Amino acid sequence: MLSNYLPILIFLVIATALAGLLLTLGSVLGRFSSRNRNDPAKLSPYECGFEAFEDSRMKFDVRYYLVAILFIVFDLEIAFLFPWAVALGKLGSFGLVAMAIFLGILIVGFIYEWKKGALEWD
Image (cartoon, rainbow, N blue to C red):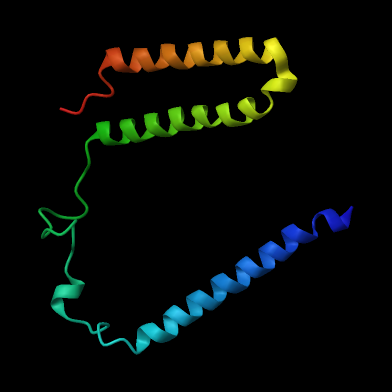
C-alpha cells in the first residue's frame, strides 16, 4: 500500500527542493544585481505603466467585487463538469439527467444575474 504513494512522495520532495533552491538562488543573486538600488523611480507607486492616479487605498466600487464573486461562483460550478465527463460512462442516464438539472439551475442563475444587471459595467 505504501509503495503506491512513493511516486507522490518523490514528487513532493523534488518540488520542495527545487522551490527552495530557486528561492535561495534568487535571493543571493538579487543582492548582487546592479538594478537593485533604492532610487525614487523604483520606490514610486506603479500602475500598469502609468503614474498612480490616486491614493492606492482608495475605495473600489462594490460592482467590482460582485463581478469577481460571480466569476468565482460560476467558475467553480463549471469545474464540476470535468469529473462528471470522466465518469459519465459509469453514471449512465441518471448522471446525464442530474447534470442537466444542475446546468439548468446554473443557467437560471446566470439569466437572473444578467437581467438584474450584475454583469453590466457602467
